[in-house]
Length: 253
Length: 296
Ligand SMILES: Nc1ncnc2c1ncn2[C@@H]1O[C@H](COP(=O)(O)OP(=O)(O)OP(=O)(O)O)[C@@H](O)[C@H]1O
Ligand SMILES: [Mg+2]
Image 1 (cartoon, protein in one colour):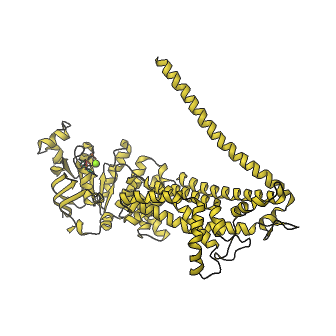
Image 2 (tube, chains in turn red, yellow):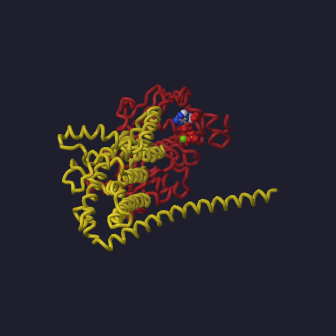
Image 3 (cartoon, helix red, strand yellow):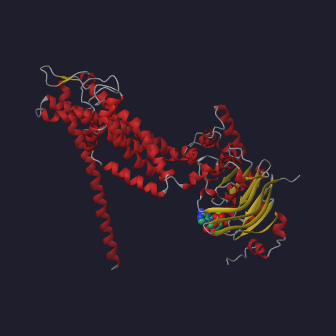
């Protein structure tokens, strides 16, 4: 049974008076990975940040239209609660300057989600295991998070997001700074995570989209040009611009 | 022509380098000289006077026939006034810094920053003078005590002097925390306040610690305002509403009356040496804190 986790209805948004996202209509299905591809400045990041209202931090931002999470408008929800339900990961992993252990429990502790030490231990172990990082760091949880590799830092940030127990996870080019081994680890991780979460992945890497996406969407200049099951999307794109982009013939107009 | 330019630049580099080196060495030499001088004078004093009696003696009668040089009252006075000032100044300073950099709008931020810089520029004698005319009678009346010249009043005044230092430097530290960290915390579902707690204080902590230490440095070394306001009573205080006398105040008030080279004169150097040690310890503790933060 397919279940629409997020429904975007005729959504428009603006920075100052620049129209960034134009009449978007997208359904994001629970426990699926939707990958979003598109050239630079096509509004991919803006779209992700619209979903958990990170854009709203910018005072020049405004929007029109509706976005529903589980049939409830995200604009009538408590913003903090929304961001706990829809977690986001950025291209550059930014662990806090403290130990691996602390990185994971710090926010849950501040937000009073866990208190007892043993609950914290459980949370750390579970989150790190879910982020496929446990085996690499289990003996040095007190090591500074600044001293692990970039790929490990990215997975640590994923673990940190998982520790907040979200429902949807937004990945914004999570592998852009990583080598192919770390990239592969994160891709495997995402395909595992989709059984528990709903995932959106923005990527500049068309191949990555074809590898991990259940569905793929192509954005261009703030418009959704095409969205389809990933295999159909890549085998028989309906739109000429999509075809040009995925075959590498895209020319910036 | 090209080679000439290259050589010129090389020479310029060497000159600049040696100037920087010279300045660096110079300040080190100054510190060593000051330390040596203090040490020498206090060493002579401590040869004539038992160090335990000096540090823990309760009476300071430098002009008596059998002179007593117990500085415990001054140590207590200094510690009491300084700790009091820190308790007042540190939270207020950090909150103000947070407010200026995180909450206030750009205009208010600029206004507040220049006001606080102005506050830092007020000479301490003027602060002492104003404090004597305003705070002292207020403290006297509010707490209905015989005199308003107390350790508490001194702490208030000193806090007022330390706050600008703490605010300006910690504001810089807070302001330079990259935006991405804030975004990361908010993305986890933190409110603005939690975000400050989660990231800003954590990441800006080395800078904030530095600010606090500089603030404490100002407080411990301050003399004029303290002389005017704390009452200058050379006895061990029993509460914060007692008049006290600090180490610095003792040196400043008595230096003029001593015979140069006499034991009283030398005892003041020994006090200076104790002050030196205290500031050294404060800096040392600060260093430990900063290192601890850096290692992470
Ligand atoms: N904070 C902002 N203020 C003003 N304009 C913005 C802001 N953020 C994004 N934009 C504009 O929105 C448009 C879309 O930007 P966005 O970052 O969403 O692109 P993107 O598809 O993520 O690009 P990239 O692949 O380079 O990450 C751009 O034209 C950009 O200039
Ligand atoms: Mg982007």
